[in-house]
Image 1 (tube, helix red, strand yellow):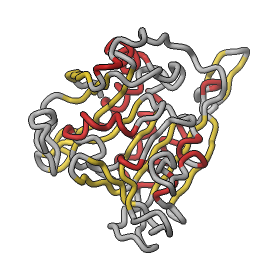
Image 2 (cartoon, rainbow, N blue to C red):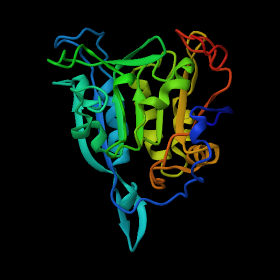
Image 3 (tube, rainbow, N blue to C red):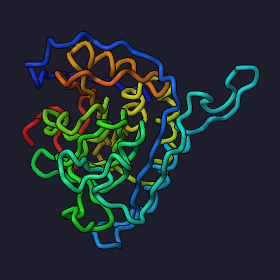
Length: 298
């Protein structure tokens, strides 16, 4: 669905704002890799409510982004043909721990370089929460040496190995009061897509994740996330409020990424982080948060 959105951008590291010109978009030359992580039952040491449909939602995205389909005489008649990502790992329940998403340059026990950060696009489906202005996701197993049952944004430096696109099917993963600091979880990551306030899980939402992956080959990743994940009045008067967040060396670079990056049009990594920018649905009013962009203090 198409929805109107407002764009806002704020300089963060002003010292870097004029260091580099905007990066030029380049089509990916090698096969990109996709990874998917989901928890449906928290019964292995960490607590959380069961959500049986969550892996189906993640699988819908994973199956679509990796759908090669077929071509005849060079014409792609089904799927995404040469643009499809390769299947680089799907993990549901099992030994899903926080080190898979944490970076060892931030915390000594981080191991994302062998897991999440090894792919080019990753989707993570976890119960989400907010602590201060810091996003947290609830993992399944309390890992020895890893501290606790949560992965925090402050433990991440995504993309310093390979990851370009991170999709968070997780509540409060992109609350507006987190925007001014989310860039700190970026290594060479290009974009994060998440939710302001609560997001929803159910069999009726599976197709939204498939459609998001499909559309992101022909439309921008940022717009595809907003178009497919925005649901007004999903419960009573509460909306589901998607947010797309990107960084760049400067304003031009940042908005060029938001406005042109697709799964089949991947830019070079940011040379530095001088700006961040978000797109969102103006007036979106979710559960557990205020109207988006109306009060960034909470």
